[in-house]
Image (cartoon, rainbow, N blue to C red; front, side, top):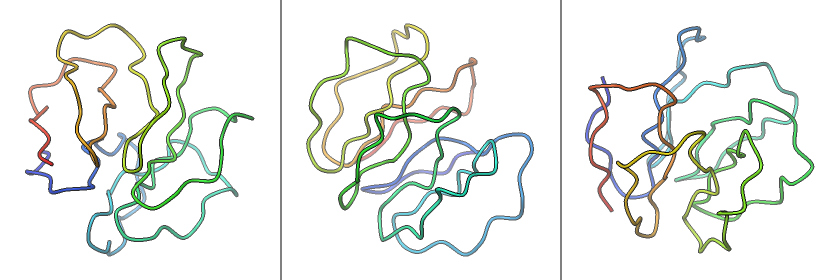
Length: 121
């Protein structure tokens, strides 16, 4: 179950298949990649280790507090994101998406889940 998240953390839960989570520093997310990827880099404080589910040429160098997760489908709703925001767009429409403040991650689970919690700033 997801615990209450602090500023800069990502509420994306780990997938069903997961290697043991390593010790994470402040602000990091225990989200495991869904596929093995040689592009995983050592993450700095407050970054999210969630990996893209498909390769993408649109991945750019990420700054502090940004999340490297890429959208799984193209979306015209993607806008320029401020530092600390996550460019991931929901894979389907969700009425639970709300306006997000700096450091929050708008990633929604692709299936309904009672463990979704409100993200703090």
